[in-house]
Amino acid sequence: MPEILKAPLVVEFPFTRSLGPVQSAFLTGLRERVVLGVRASDGRVLVPPAEYDPVTAEEIRELVEVAPTGTVTTWAWNHAPRRGQPLTTPFAWALVRLDGAGTALLHALDAPGPDAVHTGMRVRIRWAEERTGAITDIACFEPYDGEAPRLTGATGEFEDPVTGIVAPARLDYIYSPGRAQTAYINALGGRRTVGERCPSCRKVYVPPRGACPTCGVATDEQVEVGPRGTVTTFCIVNIKAKNLDIEVPYVYAHIALDGAGLALHGRIGGIPYDEVRMGLRVEPVWTEGARYPDHYRPTGEPDADYDTYREML
Image (tube, rainbow, N blue to C red; front, side, top):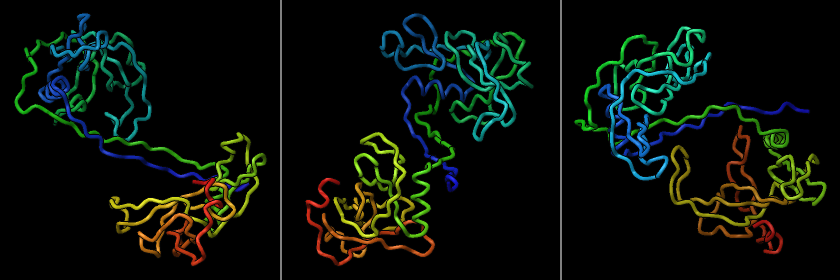
């Protein structure tokens, strides 16, 4: 069996959100080295604050200052910090109930090792040197044996309040297409298109999935299809995508390759966008060194009869 393909992939985007009065006060307070919670209907002070009561679902606005010291309620040791985490050396993820709060806040606890951490230990906030109004204004927690400091008397009214945040979202993972699609991708490297036939319904799936989604049985019989095919349906793209060097408008279509029981998608070129139509016969156009067709162009054949592709719309 050929080696199964795998590759590192990263999904990353900036997440932008506006803040209501409660979250705005909380994050602005962190910038000013003040921790604010909000009082719920049962009397608890929620830290981090919620905008709606977890019991009654009513909006809550009463802000309450709590101390920057607290108690670890539970923890887990992180022996190998990852990119973007609060500390670059091993640390504990800890739930810390700040003095005056009724709920716990999740953050990093800087400690020399797991033996130095225990439930019930006293800690305090270590503030970041530069603060912008984000949860990262708390650099981490650190062990602390002293008394809780006097509160500042903050009420949530600050100059230049934070009204919105931009948080980067990122997911790093290793993707493997599996046995069936590995064979499909390897075949594309030789400018061939290979699907797999279901032993029950005999439908040929391209790209192959390793199993028939209709019959639920494994597929392993490889079938070469195409290279020509038929446009079953299409759309005209009028908005240019970022980092995509294709001028708009252009056409993206579902194409039923000859011999396939499932349409795949591809771009249509070599013809004005307003002349693309259902039933148009097309063939792939490859560029040097590419592992997949750059686009499909008309073959010059008569259009396919509707009955030959209607089951794949």
